[in-house]
Length: 189
Length: 251
Image 1: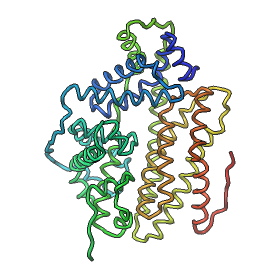
Image 2: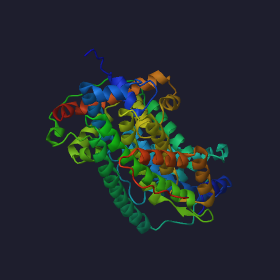
Image 3: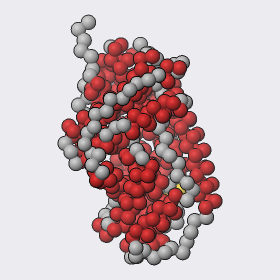
């Protein structure tokens, strides 16, 4: 099997099969990133398609020394941000969330490990809802920091904002996510 | 006691190991029940976020994306080769199984030890951390050594190493937080770097060509991450009581 670099070389020479192989190799991972950033399956699929199309058109500018995977990841981040900006939902939106019954209260332990929380579909739903209620900036900043492991400065560069603004977007995101589970945290203290 | 509690912002920065976190945050969390409770609540929330699933794509997802890209790009020549759908389906089933196994194996075992490390006795916490980190470093090292020792003359399927790296990324975060809380800055620093390396591995294509493998090996070498893991592992073993017999690994 050809490696990414060889496939890129072939694709640059007009070999569609080579680019197809790159698409099939990377699209699933890109979908995961796009879904977390957009919070929406349809948007995520659009972002994946757009980012791969954009990467095809920008192949000439791809630096051979870099990893194609990392490069197309970055393009996907930019595509997701562009999509959300284009929809004018980019402004920070404060949303009060009503808190109802506490699904975590039934957990028998204070163990904070992820697998315990993963046991509850209700908790997953609650968190998914909280994620969907984040503003676009908050969600993107949070996803880039939490899932992609970017440092605050990298997040601010990706979002084209000041580091302080990126930091406060993450703070707001975390606070909203915590609020969604706060009663549970109190119950199991 | 005259004590100023850590703010939400300081706790969040501490969780992520960011600059700007309170320099004595780990000690204050350890010593202050209120700060510890708040930090525990924060951990529960953020660790739960890790468990949020990404919707599964169908077996033909890659092909669908390709068709869409091809149509929009216009001038691309239609490819002759097509994937057999059953291969995607089989790969999907296998991947789901591996992910489930990695999820359970990667989180259950160390998480119990990290939780145990939250005891009141800092020395006991440190000892539990050392034992847990020693084992974790061994497993991380095995992933990196397998990549470093792979035959560069052939293509290499690293999907198994990627699954293990994926599971280890989550562990890394838990251990780093514990290391920070117990004041082990050296361990926390290496784990921070290791997390980045593991994330990088998970971002690689699952099938590496000799060139790609060589590039990855070079990056590992440039960061001296294996060396740092070995040094840290040796340090951890020395500090464990009773001293465990050394079991050096060689490349």
